[in-house]
Image 1 (cartoon, rainbow, N blue to C red):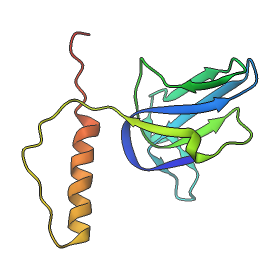
Image 2: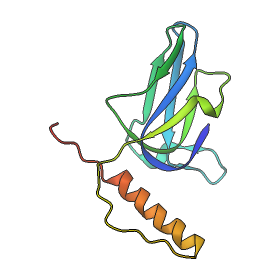
Image 3: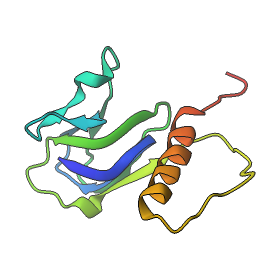
Image 4: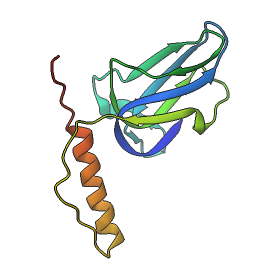
Length: 129
């Protein structure tokens, strides 16, 4: 399991050299359960799964026709991996920033940051589809 530190909307880019035909599956989740286990059930019916097939060479996998809301990924099909093989690529609509709110309270600043990230994650508009 890999933790990206906050919920984002986007995709995961994977850098890997696998065996030819090796199948790598990434499952996405926003939270862990009360025992700290991977918990994709909050996504309800969403199939938040990406599958890659290796060609035996060094590869970079990055989905092009999907996006997910996630903080955590579960990796299947790789026995050994390190966190630096996985990159969260954020996707959001271009929104003009019209203000900012820094203050001396670290918790209030974190709340403001969470609000901005929530807007980014939920304001994804596709034109021309």
